[in-house]
Image (cartoon, rainbow, N blue to C red):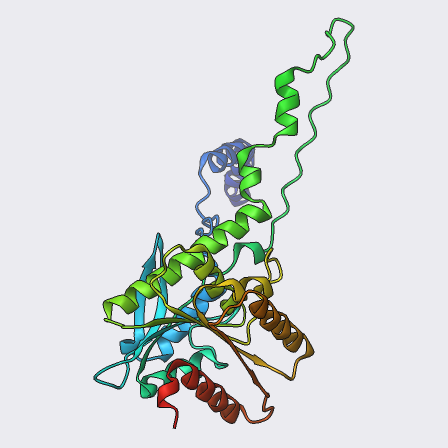
Length: 328
């Protein structure tokens, strides 16, 4: 056989077999699972977003000495309080400091400087962390309900009759809606704050404090005053208000609340603000109408540009009110 036939015959046979082999290979590739596909990305669980007060507490725990930090329990909540014992063998008592809205337990205005200076004036200090108010939290918009599927009208469909139960359900929403009402939120806020003040006073009692004074700064003065008003027999004996303010959503103003208290009350305010000065005048006039002999007021002038001198001026007034017999 010529060589040309010997070389072309195998190629001819191969061309006949290729059409039969290609479908088989394609079928096998379809049955073979894909191994080069990318694996699904792992689900990453995000940590819950902390409240502002929790973030502030974590920052203070990193910055301040461990000896000053106390973890107190108020119901199911645990919170940070800053404690400093008096530099005296015979302390005069303890001052439980209630910061205002948005302030930490070591706020640089009034709260922190006072708690640091009190031990040298023979007073123990305990500064609390207040919870974030539910009334100030942003409200999430409820998702829109999907529209019911359209139904074909039929002559055999009976007319819809509204029952008495349906009317009642519409007029009286469920309890979950009422639980989110502003009134319920305000009540829950007060209970949480009062529970923390209770925990602070209980801690001061454990330290054998002879006298316990509540000192509120800003809106903290409002909560301290309400605590005295609504707690029947609090173990604290005196109230000190520094630059007092009434919260925006409060039903009763501090001008109505503070002068009616049955405890010795000190009211330190700044005369530079017209609003603060007018509110202080109302509190003083109300105290005169109620013949409250335990209410005293002190007006201070702000010292802008000299923070240290301003805080020292405030502390000297506080020390004079706490221990008038020890004024130099």
